[in-house]
Image (cartoon, rainbow, N blue to C red; front, side):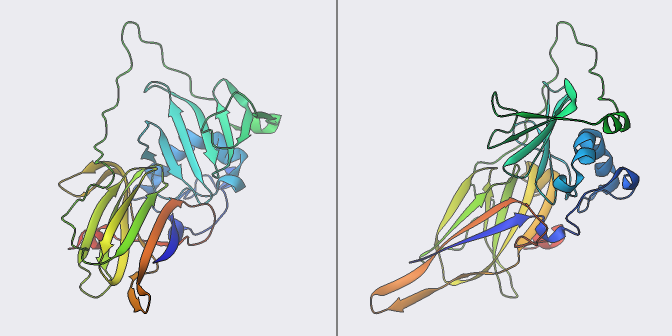
Length: 302
């Protein structure tokens, strides 16, 4: 048995530039890879303006669309990491955060004239280890004021958002036909949104052998893959539509640049085969990251 581990950085091949934007260029295209680019750019500026202005080089360029994360947050991939916000009970946004996977920068509505900085796994400022970085008077004057909170409601809570449809991890969207061998393929989703992976023959016919759902932060394993060379495709987003077999919001479609080869070799000691782990994660730099964008129509072809 041979063990291999591959990784793919989502949206990586759509990266055009690893850098930021400045106030002077704020009216030009901000991001890339979203079907509603102008609308998405405006939303990103409204949500994350302070971080984009203060840390343009660290944040990079938005890639894809703003998406609803499963825990109720809003998330935006960038060429350098992830922007996300936490609304209060479905109400106004009170804190915005950018992370490169380890370092975090945040602006809080109650502390809008400082930047909070910490390192580690905590998604929001922990009780210890947070540094307050002062904002210069020039930057403070140039920034738009934080949007005021709406008037409080009396006697009724803010409406809860509708829960998105999420199949369980490992649920097969179509009947799998990959069996008959010894190969093993583990699919790991380290994105903040869910992914449905499609495993297809890498030949001209490109028959679909598996179409499996993996929730954010989870993994699943395909056992008993027959000998062959496969193409791995994926579709990510929020709120799965079981009839259309696609996500309703925050949709992105991609494929692995390299085929997955699953051989079996008979030796004097016995038969060897491949145990493969493929991890997809938020892009953390300016390279291709092992993935390329894919047209939705091509993904949905059977």
